[in-house]
Image (cartoon, rainbow, N blue to C red; front, side, top):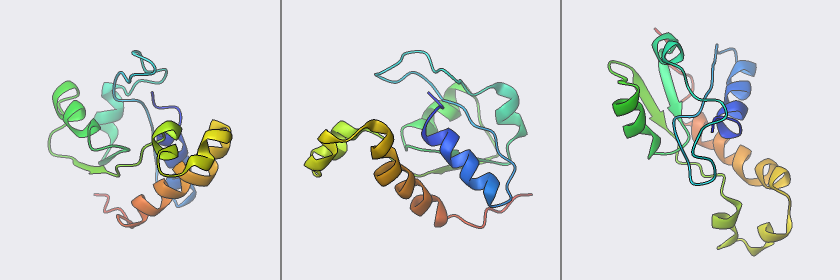
Length: 120
């Protein structure tokens, strides 16, 4: 959808001095039409593409014909239901709070392994 993880990570990386854009790569089970779909010009503009999940990489490669660009995958889910399977306390909090205590810290930790980004 490009409204949660992508948006947060773009803002986070901007604060670190990177130029960023963000968007959703394709349909998800919640919404078959991304609210903020990635655009061809975004893909062409990017030196490096960061995807929140491994499953987004083949979509980028096939649908957006990403070639010759590094694609970093972080494998960070923002499914409160999935996280609640091992952390039942997440069943009782709002999605906004879940993102603040689970999703966003996981994104920061996952992307930190790739910093600094090598931009050409």
